Each structure stands twice: as C-alpha cells, then as structure tokens.
Length: 283
Image (tube, rainbow, N blue to C red):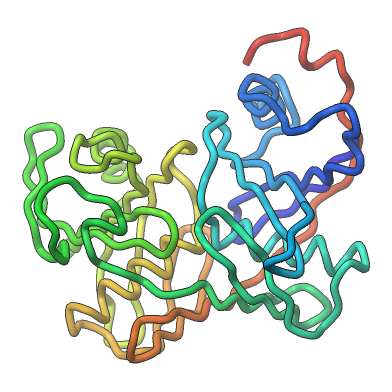
C-alpha cells in the first residue's frame, strides 16, 4: 500500500495510485480519516486517488478531504497530482488534462516539476451553480452572520463552493473562529470553503483560509482562484494577481470571462508504504 506525499505551500496531500491498492475499489471514509490523521496515520490535508481511467481527459482523479468527504476540485491537489504524474513518467512537459468532479482542467509541468500551471476553469458567482440558497442571482456583497458577527460576503465557484469576506485586517484566528460556522451555514447546501481577504494593492491580495472538510490551512489553490476572481469582480484588482497566504504565494491570471490560470510550486516530501495495522485503530 504505497503512498507518495507532496505539499503545495504547506498544504499537504497523499497520492494513492489505485494500481497499488488492487483490493480497494476506493478508500472508505474511515480509512481516509485514519490515513490523514496526524497521530494515527501518515498525516495529510487530503488524499488524491488516481490516476483513474477516463475517456474524457488524459487522466481522472478523485479528491478526498481528511474528514472522509469528497471534494469536487482542489487547486493545490491538482498541482500535486500533476507533479506525481510527471515524477512517475505518466506525463511529460506537454500540456495534459485531468478530469475531476468539478470539471476538466489543463495542466503544464514546469521547472522539472517544481512549478505547475493549471487552467482551472471559469469562475461563476451565480447562486444556482455554487450553490447558495435563495432566488437565482449573482451572490455579491450579501450579508451573513457567524458567532453573532455580521459579515459582507461574495460567493463563487470554480467547480467547488467558496465564500469570500473582504476585511481591512485578517488573521489566522479570524479564520479559525468564524470559519467552522460559515462553512456549515444553511445558505450553502454543500457546505463551503471560506476565505478572509485583504486587498494589498491592485496586484496583490492576502487571504486566510478555512477549508471545507479540512479546517484551517496554510494555502489553497482553488481559494486563491476564487478570491482573486472576487476581488477582480469587485474592481479592486487587475487581471494578474499574486495571492499571499501563510504558506506562500500563488500567481493568478483572470481572463475577461473569468477563466482562471493558476501557477504555483509543489514540493516532494516522501514515499512509503502503509501498514494494515493502522486500520485497527479508529481516528
């Protein structure tokens, strides 16, 4: 049961190749929780299960959060998976496509795998696509309350849901305090990723992230795409934006119709094997 561990700006994932797990159709929720646990397992912010067969793209991928739930898309996860495909010789330096539940993306490996660009798809602010409860609309500058505090938020999707809150000052404590309630707010039937955003200037924003199914995280690729698009939609930044996070920076380029290109680093951490004994303990 072989695993491959990478991190993208401190957001770490384990890649599990289904061919190394012939006795698993897919890992169960309990197995995922144990494997991702920082004390009972290997420890990670999620599992990338692939490559899987597909006729729609070069490769297919399933993405699991550490709580066992499945994510539609992950920007950091896609960069990490692209690096894994490159390292294993499944993909080269030419562009290739990856199918996720949140849509098909195109990836290009650069600098021998240390830098990856992903065409993440089109950002939408429409409530029916995200989804957000209520009448059909673009969800821009609406009100939401958590822990008795009212915020103004914008919602977006790039294949997975996001709630972005613009503030003059942000902190990790802010994300940890309000993130859990906002993630599970009834407005978001599929729950949501949450970002607290500060605009530095027209080319730079800073975010703190509460990730759906994972909690506070040092970096997020899809959150970077969504918040940069929100800032651009609000007229606060230009179409090229550097997103600053506790783990580092991601470069975002936004087209006039809100298709987003994400470029950021990936670091290889380790390879190893899982022992069946870890599954004798519940995480």
